[in-house]
Image 1 (spheres, rainbow, N blue to C red):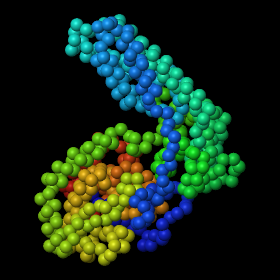
Image 2: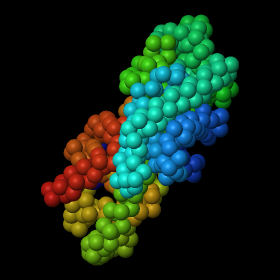
Image 3: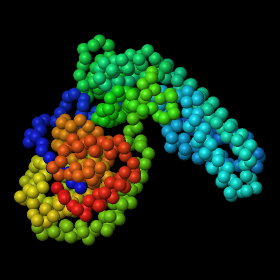
Image 4: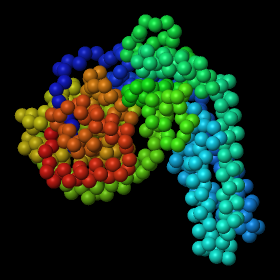
Length: 477
C-alpha cells in the first residue's frame, strides 16, 4: 500500500509564490506557515437560491392532491407517505438543485410527473395492503395524481419566473476559464444575453492574448484579486482543469462546465446553446457520509483483530532497530490539511530534513531484515488504521505525500493538485493497478483524479477487495 519511490530533483528550490495558474491550486504550505494549502482564506459569498421554494412547491402539490380524495382518505399518513416519496425521488434526481440557467415551467415536467406517479402508486398499494377498506379507487387516484402534477408545475413555474427576474436584475459576476479566443466569444455571448444572470468580468487562461476587452488572468494572485474586487460568484469552464476547479470552489464560487453533456431531458441547462452542468464539489456529493461510516465500520474491528500482529511487529522493530517503534511523519491530507501519519519504523533517518525531503528507497542498506520484511508485506502501514479512525485518512483514497514532494509534483504534473479534493487513503485505485514503488507519478495522478471524479461507495468496496487479494502476493516498496 505504500507509494514512496520515484526520481525527483535533489534540490527543489524555494516555495513557489506567483506562477502560471496550472497546478497551483493545491500546493502545501511550509512547516510553521499554515496547516492548509497555500491558498488565500475562503471568501464569504452570498448563497445561491435555496431549495426551500421548490420543496414548498412539492408540499403544496401534495396537500392539494390529497384534498381530491374522499374524506376517509384525507389522513396525515397519506400526505406524509406521498410527500416523503416525492422528496426522496426528486432529490435523488437533482430536481432541487438550481441549474446554471433556471428552467421553464415545462422543462422538468417529465421528471416530475414520472416520480409523482411512482409516489402515488406506491401509496395506493400501501393503503390497499394495510387498510383494504380505505383502498383508493382508480378515478380518485388519477384525480389526485393529475392535481399533483398540475400544481407542482404551476408553483415551480412561478418560482423559476421570480428567480429569472432576479437574475436579470442582479447578474452574478463570473470568470470564464479557457483558451482566450473561445473564452472571449463565450463571454461576448453572455454579455449580449443578460437573461442568463451571469456577467463575465474576466478570463482565465495560461497566457494573455494582447486583445482589448476583458482582462486575462494568468496567475493565482491575479485570480484572487479579481475574485475579491469583483465579488465573483461563478467560474465557467470551457476546458477541464481540476486544479482551477478546486481553487474556485475553495473561494466559495459555484463552478460550471460548459460544452459537456447537459442533464438528460432538461432543455434549460444551456447558456446560449452551450450545454452546461454544475461541477459539484466533492464535499456535496451524496454518499460521503457512507464512506466515513464504512471507514469506521471496517477500521475499528480490523484494528482490534490486528492487535496481536501489531504487537509482534512492534517487538520485532524494537529488537532489530532499538527504541522508537513508531515512525511519525507529516503528510498532506484532504484540502491540504497537514496531519501526522503513523507507520512502523523500518529504518532510522539521519535527521528530520532527510525524513521530510528524501524519497524512500526500497533496498536502503540501513534497513534491517525486520524492516525489509515489514516494508515488503506492507505491515508497516498497519498503524495507519488509527489515522483512519481519527478521520485523518480514509481506507480508500489517494496516497498522502509529504509537503515537500506535494510542492514539487504540483509544479511538474498537471492535476496533481486536485488529488486533495478527497480524503487520502491507505490504498487507492492507483495502487490496485500496480502503481506503487518506482512507478510514474503522472500515472498515479491520473488514476487518483479518475477515482475522485467517478467516486462511489461500491468502487471503494471493490478497491478494498482487490487490495485484500493483492496482499496474498505482496510486493511492497
